[in-house]
Image 1 (cartoon, rainbow, N blue to C red):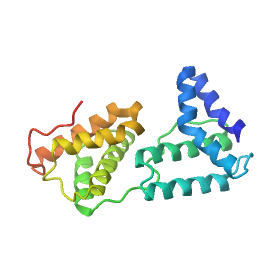
Image 2: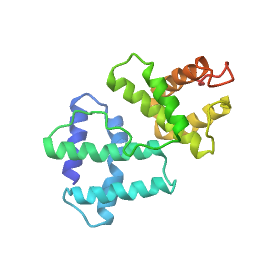
Image 3: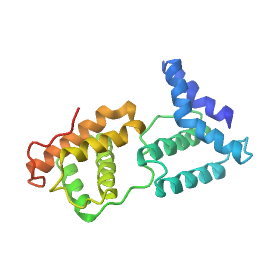
Length: 199
């Protein structure tokens, strides 16, 4: 397994990724998998053991011991390893959020309406949709069921919550949130017309 993990790191090195970022990527993406293997006596690459790892992390997510964004990072790491093991390389493709977090039909309908207004590539629209999906999941976990009473504190709390898991991609997160809030205001869904995502 250690040799398999070296492969995506070497590919990243070939792309010009700095040594400090390689260390950060290893610690954030693959160290947890290595630790899981060590705890279970595994040394060779095993899809079965990786599936056990995914289920373990999914249970931690369900118990709210880890956040949805961090869960996404961990599962993406598994999929990168499988791709590298099977093909010898990685296309660094977008893998999505793992399981799609379900939200109530009102939230989902608003998100679907919003996405239908975007003139973006399929891939970009999928990225934006994922950002909005996890924002709605955050709201619903706080007991909110509607957007009409959304306030600035909801946005700042969400960004504070997601920052530790998404430090390198906060620009995209804030942008997606901003255009979504603009849509909610322009559609009359949100009452506060001065609402906007903070920098």
